Length: 611
Ligand SMILES: Nc1ncnc2c1ncn2[C@@H]1O[C@H](COP(=O)(O)OP(=O)(O)OP(=O)(O)O)[C@@H](O)[C@H]1O
Ligand SMILES: [Mg+2]
Figure (cartoon, rainbow, N blue to C red):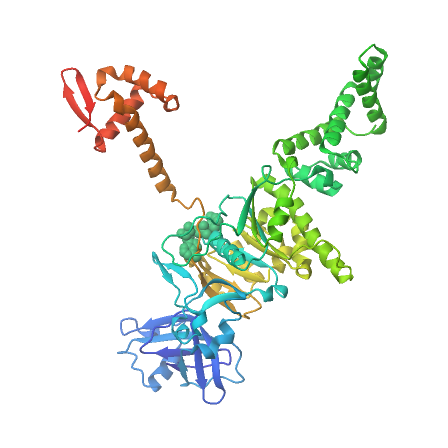
């Protein structure tokens, strides 16, 4: 392995007869004058006499060929592997042509590759193409987890990629980008598992109902048990919002998440909501005012002159007062607010509080927050603002020397579909709090992990604060452009983005000072719905067939001429099947085809029976 061709202080070509190069491989170049230089393969090619070197002008130029010949390579006979190698640090002067190169021992590149320990770092996956270097690695770094490649689950043989927990203080937030099916959910799952293993309080918003950690991946040894390390909460069923504790801002956010509020509605809420309002007091004020506005002052006064029950009278008196108090609020605004409030109420949101989530975090657990996306957006705004406040108050109190405040731990907030929570270009209720945490969460130990298919749609202020970015396969040009702008990903890597296999990613982090190509490890657990949709259909069909066969059992043999009677009996037993002559006949034929029944022609028409 040696340097060939014209060199610069940044880049060299390395040729080898024996060894094929792989992209992202690290090489050590032994420059006789400058000592060891470390470089990374950014392009790799092989040539033999069937593909003469000279035709490939774009990669290797004539000077490389010349130098190969001078160094004793026979271009017309040998197979020659050539790598373009970028130096990790610029050399003082151009590298000496002919300098030897070798694959590094672990000790030569340890600082470059491993910036943490298995105890203090999140083991996200393996660094690609580092098998040889991993051979000389410390034992405690070997085989830390499994990877899934080419249909096999195997213990990793590479150098592990460890994201140091302590570095979060300096580089707090993580972005996960990638197209559909590129491995984002797996990546999120791995990060959540690692946080659970380290007992770091975390919450994850789970719009896809996929974040369950109780089902273990099959075929792995020593899988940790996560059952008691996470807790799932359904919005409206286990957790919710305490109306009494709502400020005006919270209430406005909640209402506008159902459907954006008009300006008139917003100011009506500002006026109508009073400190200390319960759901009942606020909603009955709305309903009464709406009724009053519909009737009008004159009719209400007329009604009040009539005889009526004292309770009725009280109501009309109240309506009159409300009209006098709020003379300028339009009816449509009041109705609009009331309608949104009823929708929130129907979701069960107001029947619970967020105490269970706080408790889970205090216990160092992962809280999984589930709900439909619209409700999740509303609720997360309230939840995140509250949790963040709890942490901030505690921390600020501590700084002011008053440590009496209630303890609240640092925590991680993770979500998929992050562009819904902090969209670019328009407002969303949760955008404010996410931006705030992105900008100053570091001070308080509140960290974000935001995944999205569409980095282009994520608010720029937030994107700019995501220091560590994990980038999976990305096909859209727009998104690739955003990614190149926002990370230190080079042109070579950007070109490869559309072709990355699922689970492969580039990590761009100031901590490593260069992009690292990794394969995310195989999660220890799997999502409750990883069933392939086609397997799902097959399963469903099989179950339906078995059930029908069970039902038919008592009626066999069945004569074609007698179908109607059988149907009556079957429909009485299983009304949900809604069988008709045609559908039953089709099903019987299918059962015959699959060999579960037999069909024989008799003088009374076809007969279906057992073998
Ligand atoms: N680290 C990995 N190791 C092995 N296989 C993986 C890995 N990551 C992803 N895969 C494979 O790719 C598939 C898609 O991954 P995943 O569900 O994480 O994609 P996604 O980016 O979340 O997609 P979407 O945006 O559609 O939700 C997985 O079902 C799995 O088969
Ligand atoms: Mg996903």
